[in-house]
Length: 338
Image 1 (cartoon, rainbow, N blue to C red):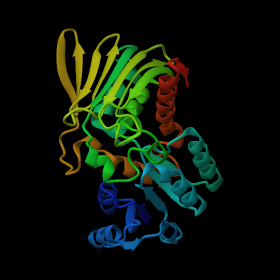
Image 2 (image 1 turned 180 degrees about the vertical axis):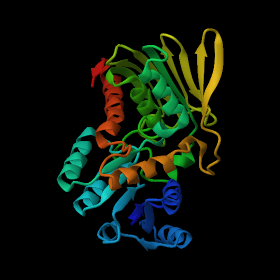
Image 3 (image 1 turned 45 degrees about the horizontal axis):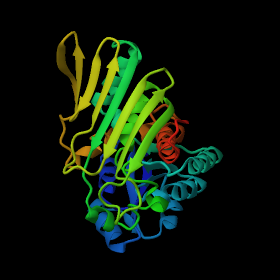
Image 4 (image 1 turned 30 degrees about the vertical axis):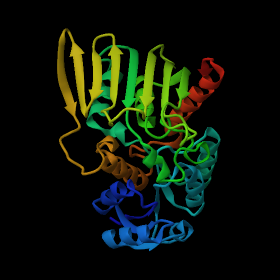
């Protein structure tokens, strides 16, 4: 079987996860890497034995490239995705797929006109804990969902923002803790329960107001289409990166994802029924360990004309809608229907 040729745009920390997955893939091989900083592109190309570019337009017009991975700052995602699609390439985008809903519509239009695939990296959907929780909810094994809570208490200091000019600015990052650190949690919450109808929330900047213009703390009440209610809290003001906590309160049991494990509380007993910690990745723990699975599914979906588990733009943009709703609610004080 011929493998799909791939280029990775952006040689920051997350690109290593993508590159390692591709070089060990049954379906893809790494053709090139791209970064505007020549030394980063060269270092990655030397490590992964591939070509390098500083201009992504050269890479996406290479006939050897079938798939483009976009691992760049948020404000570049839609522009690069659209150009790659117009060049006839499939596209896999790191989160968030876009900063704003309007950008999503442009990407969807370019995808439909090109006939190519676009996937989004919400890799935590492929964690064993997430999949098991989803299976139990969808099967009715734990009864109807009454509520869900998501808690993210992480730490980001001044150096984190000042080391990259695009961070901490609405124009380039699209937001703060909502769209960058906690978007995976928001995605899992809406994916597990079945879609958010309305939100009421608030945002604030508690610590680094002199450094950033975006929020470092956010909270919301989520009203789901099926009648369930959620609560959400996220902050970058803690002193460490604590494990994310997601709890689903169902009629027959409670499901709790914490520190890479899924627990079920039922009839006074608590037991672990899934564990994501069996494999050490060597990457940051909060990235999860499912990029490899997501990438393989994306490539399989391309090769089998859509039968793989590709997280589409339409699915991924639901989290952006929720985030947009929280911002609007924070500015108006109203419940926002999304």
